[in-house]
Length: 337
Image 1 (cartoon, helix red, strand yellow):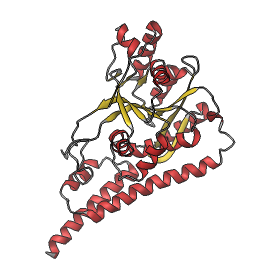
Image 2 (cartoon, helix red, strand yellow; image 1 turned 45 degrees about the horizontal axis):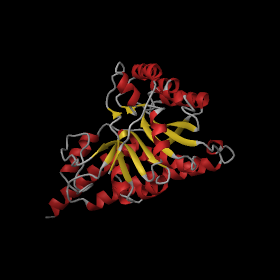
Image 3 (cartoon, helix red, strand yellow; image 1 turned 30 degrees about the vertical axis):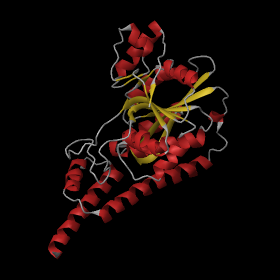
Image 4 (cartoon, helix red, strand yellow; image 1 turned 90 degrees about the vertical axis):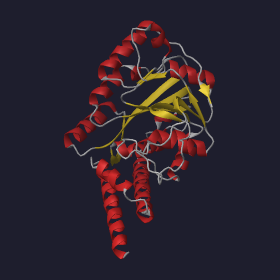
């Protein structure tokens, strides 16, 4: 019996070391840790330890951000606009300098896409162990002053932490904006249609995006989106918006952030924030068919009506921008649940 207990504890410790290694280093040993996790279903103390580590990492980020922000009190000009304002936070991979360049030259080049609507933006980037990339980021910050550089490992498993960091930045620096649009750097945002839609609809306590419903957790240990029952026991996720591009009304963001900090860590950022945490505070989620996986830039109707497009390459950013200028834009209603 003692030998069995010892073996269980050894496996739990291995799981703990592997996952913590991933959290702090972004290591590619996730598959090993994931497979270890599936062989240990009775490791409550270790799971608790992991949660404490996740919580500590978020607290560290928040603390460092707050200290840094105190030194920037005299540079709060971003919050002074009286216009209807949308803040776009682009979560970007540190190495994707080419995509940030393309985005700046295309859809983020418009600060006032329509009268009385102001667009503000920041790229959100974490740390990498590649020194040359870190140096490139510093150069980029000096040149453009449009990057929020967080003190966390920039990795897939840290996307929730990265997005919470972005939310914290928005709440502190831009409390007067009307909406926050979170996008990945492989998304192209229609800088005309989304702002006009939000201006007309005046959505309250809402997440808007590509809505996904009735999806069960992936219980396959080999999957990138594997979630054990210990992390999420329910058979179906709450409705959520896909993480590559979604809008959160600012009237809900502080409560959503506060709830996320008090909720057990979940590494699938879109499900965690726009599904689990949103449902806890009884926020609404609205789907719109004009958030698309692909866009046919030769189809004028598609170009006129789309809101956002996923899987966007550097070439696509320029291609879609050229098509937009060719045909103009319109908007369509969304469906709320």
